[in-house]
Amino acid sequence: MKLFVLFFAAFFTNFSSTISTNEYTLEEALQKGVIQLELIGNSNSTHYEKPILATLKNNIGKKVVIRIISGYRIESIDNDVQDILTTQEELFVINPYESKTEKLSGMCIQHNNRAPSEGDKYRFSGLEKGALLAFSQAVDSSDEQTVSAQQAMWVLSDDEELYDLINYGGEEEWKLAKRVAQLSGKELPSKEAFKKEVAKRSQLKAQLRGVFKFRFSRAVPIHIALFDENDIVLKEIYRKMTPKGEHVVEYTFDALPHQGKTIYAKLIAADDVLLSRKIDL
Image (cartoon, rainbow, N blue to C red; front, top):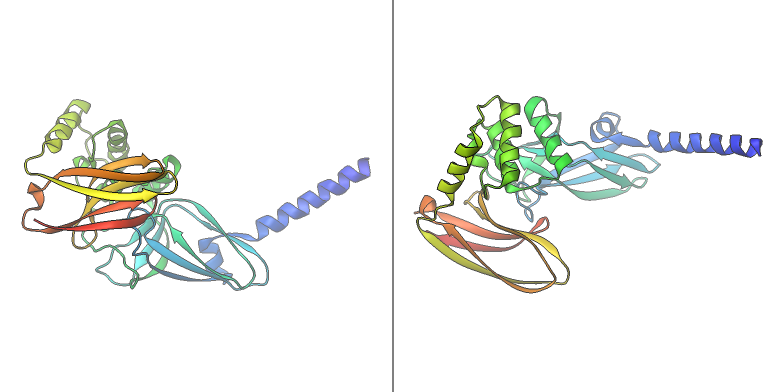
């Protein structure tokens, strides 16, 4: 019995060692030539969900596990297109000499640049530092892949106002404001002042209504958001977990801030943009 236990322990140790040897962070795998990497924009997603398509080719004769760390900077080749920070740790298993394309979770860190599309090429630029790294990892740990979190990311990356992260003004957004204030060094308003700003921004001065009709075979999280002509999100106006079946969703928003512009209302289900409405104001 003792011999069997020792043999099992030795086998388990060797097995664990083999597994750990075959696992690399994306940065390690590139440095060691284990994989080749191609990065392009994902036009089927928004810039705050799954904006990057990564094609990873295994260069060696054994299976590898590639770990994506939250906070990797994915840098656009085109200076007019957004850079992206990864915001979800993910593991991709790739067989010997196999190529695999995966969608990476991320958020924009250049508010005034246009969103990535399928023709836009990117390069890996290593791990970000400081407040942006800390916040990208906070998004991961709390699973806050939302418009409000994207707005909060812009507060850090583009030195914007804390109030700009308001969409609905609930407790989660107040917690976001506190976290971003701590990371950025910006002065945190009182909770009362935050609530007043929420009330102010929720007043509809020129109400516009729209409708989306859709059908799902299973329950799906959806949200509706407004985007500008560069596919940059302006505001989320609806979010809900939708049961399977047919649905008609009516949404409203304040059109006054967008007068004279062309905007788009988009229905996003899980990670994909399903429907888009062009609105000339």
